[in-house]
Image (cartoon, rainbow over all chains, first blue to last red; front, side, top):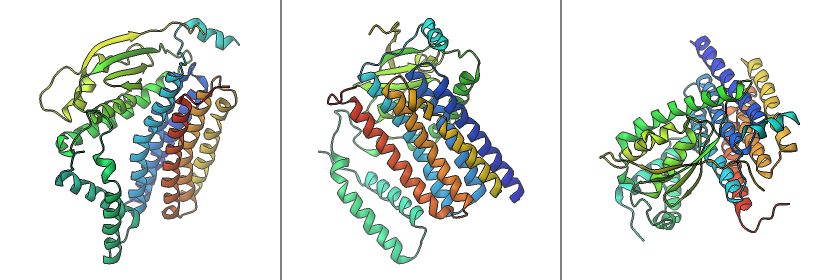
Length: 110
Length: 186
Length: 90
């Protein structure tokens, strides 16, 4: 029983870490600020949820696992709100997103 | 200044008490009694905040929400979070990232400010879209590629939010515009 | 299982260090803030993993909750300050 539990939890943690890795790479690779907010708000949220659910499966039904589920709930609510607040601040200060493809090419050739 | 109903007070007491029990982990008489005293104090301090109107169309009472629908909505939202994660990952790991960012604005016809807050948060969690600004009922949404705002354009996702509050269905999204600002001029 | 937590904590530390590139040479102020926000949210998971590594998750989980709430409020307040008219970009 604990063997299966351990394997499932390892699978979840590894998947979450892969998602967080892709989110980190997205912050570096994506071309403009508003696209980077997508990488932070979606990929990172899913990665954190996967890792903590994996830890809950490893822990079993204890008081700590309920607290970990509280952390999951809080992050699923708070992470999109935080990135929304930053994007809103940038939009209010007049940061323009760029659309044309040649500007992306320019940044790559630098 | 509106008053809170008995149902709303009971629900906030129960949820705060559940939070206390999870955090403390003791079930004996003294700890539960201390919890009741603390929760009553928190509710007394926050009463003015909960009855204050921040917007004109604030939700008056918790009983406007249909709770049976909320369960379905939460599971739908979890599914959307997973789809959104895979969508962003698929974009990032391609060699030539297929992004074509678009800014769209639309007006949402929703009953209360809380419904707009839920819609904004849902937009941020569904694949490829991110709420940037809400002013009155004017939403500004950033979409990462051409097809990702289809869920808003076909009115599928905002109707899920509307169903949380009202029984009959109607069109939520009105005058959707695609603001494609070209290369920045400054 | 302990060694698995050790390895995943090490890998996670490396992943957390990646957005520092964006903090150092982000073209705008908002990019830097976004990267610091990403670092803060990933640190939550790192603290939980360290708790499992030391076999005392019941102590570390409270630190995790407090850190999550503090990081969230901090990033909200910085965003509010940056968007206010008093702030001048340099």
